[in-house]
Length: 400
Ligand code: FES
Ligand SMILES: [Fe+2]
Image (cartoon, rainbow, N blue to C red; front, side, top):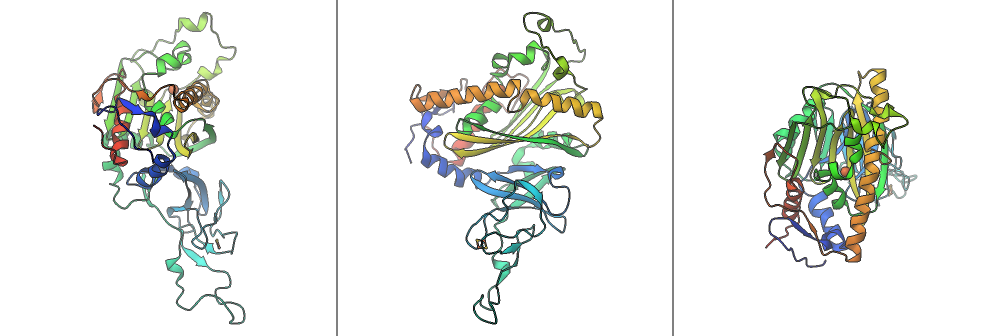
């Protein structure tokens, strides 16, 4: 692994090697993804019935989130205890007792080994010894905790409980979101041409939104606001903006040079308690965000040093009206992989990775110094610096 020269002690300058080095990528798997951090795995509505499962990753490790036959919620590494084959190969489905395709070892949804093919051999020939204990050969399971409908998992026994780990503001925002039963609207996924940390920075980067995503202001998707809040807890951050008390729907820019042929994407309904924007960036790599009526859970999955997969779960409420459901689906064309905003971010993160890998720059700049735990403006890069501070602590990187 490259020895990295860290150019500043306040996390305002990030050396490019951390986005490029294979050794660092591998170390991140152990110290961050398998380290003492929580990972968003899904919502209860992903797996409503006993036997339901979804497949995902934490870092590069394949994971299954499974509601077992006994209705318990479990997560385990999707790697057979025998030789390591994938026990579950589908993205999602229902299977109470998955069977490994290689030698037919059989598990239940808790990850427990329940059956071994030819355990007694055939006609008492061969098989496993009498002291072979199936209880000692289950799948590697994760520690699970939920905040109402939202499910988290961690590999590490030392990870502090969620309330402590995420901090009050994020914990309470998730509780608030879950005040009604959640419903899955749909799933999407995309692959971005960048290191996972560049996309993670992009999500925390409030500075770029008005500059890059001019569509938002142009067409009144995000309205000028007087009530904004940024909360930082450790390496997590929560950005919130609420609609102004008196709402003015007249956006002159819509009637000028740029007009939409179909304006139905702008239709919406009152957002949850006036929250027009809520972006919870959870360290290391998950997002729970809302723009207008569009709630998304995003899982950022490092695929390789310069490729990152993003899994989207769009969700709403069980009791949404038909009109609300239609609005939510339409609005996915803003933040989704092919959305007005999503495409701009995808283009930009690829440009950054390209510049870094060609050596056009030797460090990435996040100006300013302080990391305020809360503020009433979004004119700072403190959220990104907080990420990097947490990253250096996780990776045992001493900064000068
Ligand atoms: S690898 Fe799974 S049963 Fe052999
Ligand atoms: Fe963006």
